[in-house]
Image 1 (tube, rainbow, N blue to C red):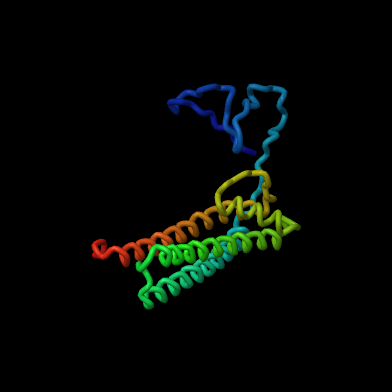
Image 2 (cartoon, rainbow, N blue to C red):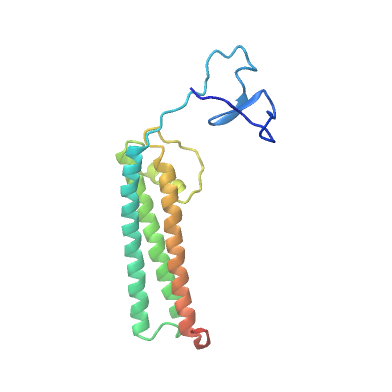
Length: 192
């Protein structure tokens, strides 16, 4: 059973004695409503260790997928640089950036599909389309909230969101680095 906590502006006296915080929402205190026999907002037991272990394995897989995307991008940029094409024209540089962005986007889509498959294995979804949609919402931290997973696997949602944020950071760094190298190759005065 949850213990109500009175909120106040100064921290010393209650702001409103009839409002207390109960885990998920503000509602009148049971003391303010004597007819309330029991707490309708019973705490939900949410599994932690199982989803953390499963989610950690998914995170490791997404790191490997992203590492492959980074390696492919590095290989393309090194190949173009060896041929002396980097910085030689706008369209070649545009093509290199397009390949970089395509590699990053492909990695993200594969990672979203991996999480969707994981949701299906856990029994949260029966159709891949619904699982992919839910996974994409979590991964991109969009957060529609139209589907809430069962308490057994609910922790996978925030784990996927954290994973997505980190992988988008890796993609951003990869794209920025490629563009920086192309600008340095094209404009000699910007080289250090």
